[in-house]
Length: 147
Image (tube, rainbow, N blue to C red; front, side, top):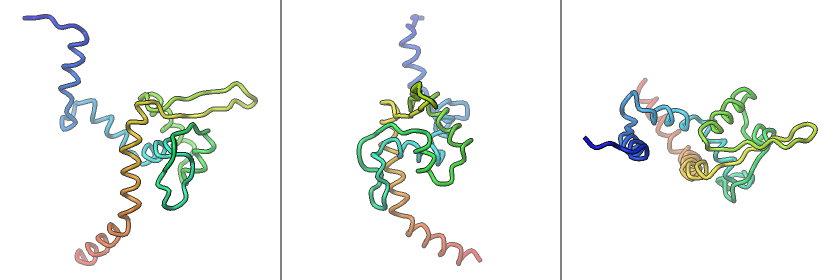
């Protein structure tokens, strides 16, 4: 039996990830990134801040302060935004930078890993916005048939 290096063991484990299996760690990651607040935070940090209708989060990624994110993400509670930002930082998708000012200035920015996920999340957000009328019409048709 041949011995494996640590790098070979990591590569083998990575090749064995299967989100269809209950014990697979990728399932927990999918659960995290499918959260609406994660999607919206990634979309916000991956854009230039121009969020008028039709802009679809265009522009270059930029850092944002907590207060900017809070204002932009209508309906998010302080607790939920804080939890979301912490989980994204823990997973290596964003960085948190504290500048020693009075009061302390904290900003958040996508990492390279976060940028790679942002591309897909932006597409998902755009798809939802573009097809909402179709979905609403289908829901109405379904609800009419179901009653």
